Image 1 (spheres, helix red, strand yellow):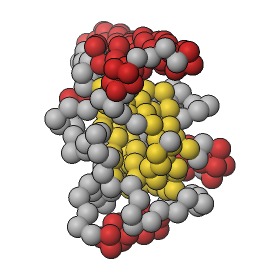
Image 2 (tube, rainbow, N blue to C red):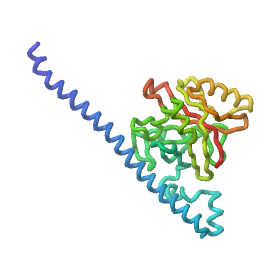
Image 3 (cartoon, one colour):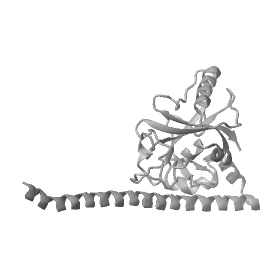
Image 4 (cartoon, rainbow, N blue to C red):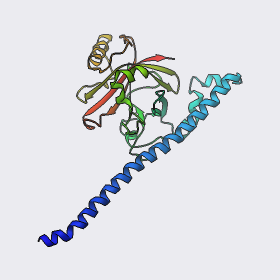
Length: 258
């Protein structure tokens, strides 16, 4: 029996090695594919944005071009031609968070699809299907995977440190129709038991109670004040350090029109 086991051991070791190698290749390809896809999308957006700024600088836009801004801002036209699910762009200066924001009629589709709606383990940054980008509500929610190279929402957890939050206190969100500076006021770990993704508040008091609860959980102390009449943005990612199934890391910020 021992001899048979001895003969089998090299094959077992080989099988473990090959499986581990497969997992490593799969892991590396996920990051390669995600980086390549994101770079292509960033290139399209940056070129369109630069072209838009040049047109605004020369004042050559026609009346019809100016009116079109109220239906879709020019920098999004090329991206919209690729994927009509695009609703905006999110950026944190000095970080790797520089992503298109997508939205469809559910919160599952873009968990494992890139900007071109192709299969991708890295997924995309996407807006909750209950939100309306044409009329930003009390709580606009965005989701993204916590990538280990800090892309997507991989850098969100750094907001748990006061110094980092102070240095990156403003997050830039551009939608198809408006530009916003969102001012960070809270960052915290939570479980899915806390319904931080509430979008429907019955009254100002209800919203104030929610904000008080959020601020009591925050790991940072920011100067941004949120009034009952304000609107906020919630950025949510799985907390891979603790438990990706039940744990979440959340950053919340006040929405301010630019």
